[in-house]
Image (cartoon, rainbow, N blue to C red; front, side):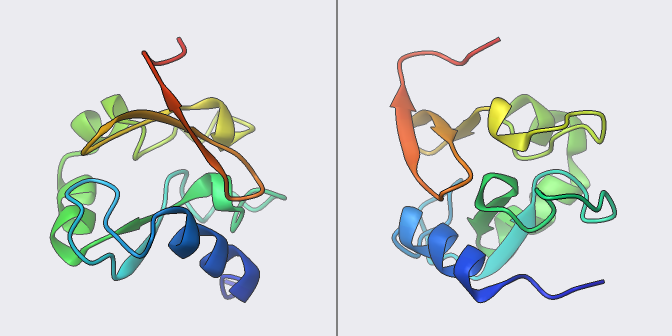
Amino acid sequence: MSAIPLESRWAVVNRQWGLCFRCMMKGTEWHHRRGRSVVDAHTHCPCNGVLLCHTCHAWAHRNPEAAQDDGLIVLRSVKEPALVNLHGFDGWWAIDCAGQSYALERPRK
């Protein structure tokens, strides 16, 4: 398994100001929204990564259905993780491959 490129790590950390996407505490762990075993152009892309604290990262893996409802887990069949919005501490967000985020009034279906 290849390491997450530094550019992707920095894009995600900067996008979230170093905070956990779910609880806004200090973010310490990169979470792959779509399993890292899916190897393609989005494996380590900022659209597939989200910064979480250890507690929220563990929660996402222990509660995959709830995490999927919030966009923290993306199905393997989804070709572009950016198409799945994220629900965090302060509402719904769209994210892109460049590491940008966009607040949404409601999630895309």
